[in-house]
Length: 348
Image (cartoon, one colour):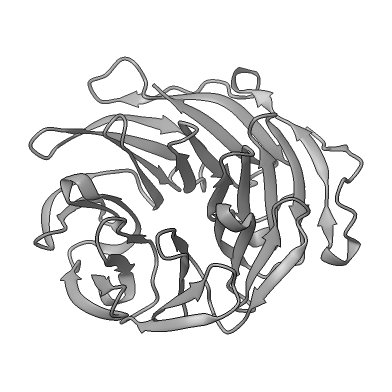
């Protein structure tokens, strides 16, 4: 579907902001012949409800952020050097911020109404106003910037970057507060809300590095040599469980955060890049570049059951679960004549 031009409400040509409106379509009208591979459950755990085309967006799609109140989703189109803006209430793609440099991590800081983007190529952190998309902040010096996390209690932003570091930055992106050295480039990481630790996947060092965020130093190294190329991570503080997605071999690895030991591991789909915990249903959603989203049910006594593999498209390995909206969003890159998409799934 081609985008329909719309009158741009934000006339900021210096920012190279492009506005388009691309209507989403009902899933049934574009998805044909898809069936789920179930594991002991006839009722599929994810229902594809809508597909939002991202016409003209090339290359790899990376991480997401969401302005829940406004119902806007921000998609880092890394290969397109743009940030795509989707209105999930109207189910429209409403704009693109161009001129970025390998955008990877994205955050939305609600209190400041600031969209933050980590750019891997030029090492910049950029902040855009949510109402006008105007560039309002920039901080440089973060080569190979990647994942971002926000600590609302302390109003701090954590950024994984470089050959091995976490940066601690104030939420307005005005200054760097600290640098925490790591043994390799950080991939997925999670910040405790109740505790003071940060858990970091460092696949180059075959470990999970544990950081004390008050002391700004590493306090533990949990070996992961049996599970190489561990990238995504999710955390359930209530049960003291850390969930890690490994690519080699393709496994879901569950760790006890009190002991730092592996509780169990189970096979999953190949080439995983995102992993989310659904606290209401006690489920995990694991998106894989093989072309599936794996749903795993968590039972009592650390029992993990694979409910289904929901087919997607090869290369669709980044996703984002928003509990407040009760929706899973999947980034589908352009492949073989098919345009890039954001797919919306309703858990059930």
